[in-house]
Image (cartoon, rainbow, N blue to C red; front, side):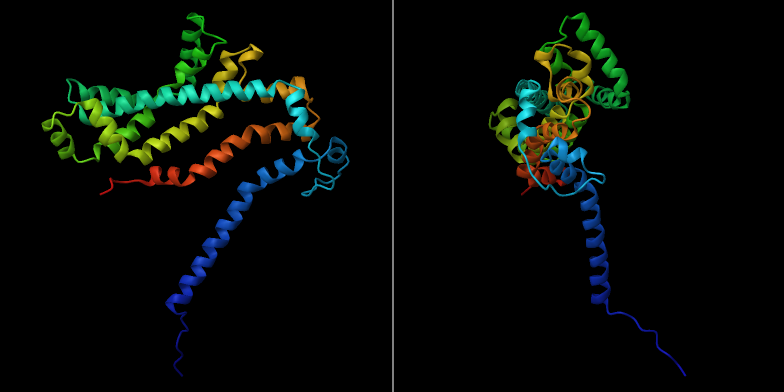
Length: 287
């Protein structure tokens, strides 16, 4: 007797595949978000409650805000946050100026040795970060810029990757617009800010946000170049809190400090997440 192999309808197969994908995404999201959840819950536990748990609890029986108050009194966390904010804003603005002008130069302006210069620029991406850090440290030290905001900012105002990303985006703007602007007597500077930047705004916004996040999370360079507490960033502050503030055993207070430090980045990402995705995924120009 002939038997027919049962086959699921195409729609049913698609639903099963979709269900498996969503299940995997949910499990992955839980794995990624769980450390943040544990950090937040721990920050609301008292020192006694945390140390009295034989098995860490995922819930808080008696929430307290004392850890957050202690974060600002045990160490000068407010100063660390202010220093980091200044460093982030100044560095990001400096990087944006350098990146926009460099990307525009490589994308639209013709000059002798342009291809060679761009190739050499890209080759810098192959240099290990550790070598750059050592060179920058020696240079900044010889210029007597340690424990200064200028010493913190200068090595971070250039990003080869961001220049390359924006240059490629600028290159996708039809050259006919540039030639038409030249016929109308429009200068390069006006064309850059009136045409190129507005068209490539998603990418410009994306590199701005990514650079701001990078600066806020910066750890190695601030730790190397600053040993004066008045110039500490939050990256230095975490170590200072651990060693000179709460002590290594007061985990809830440490978690409260980390929550405070993390909140600005979380807020920036939640507010601009659509812009970030749009800029990264952008493959062409609009219109």
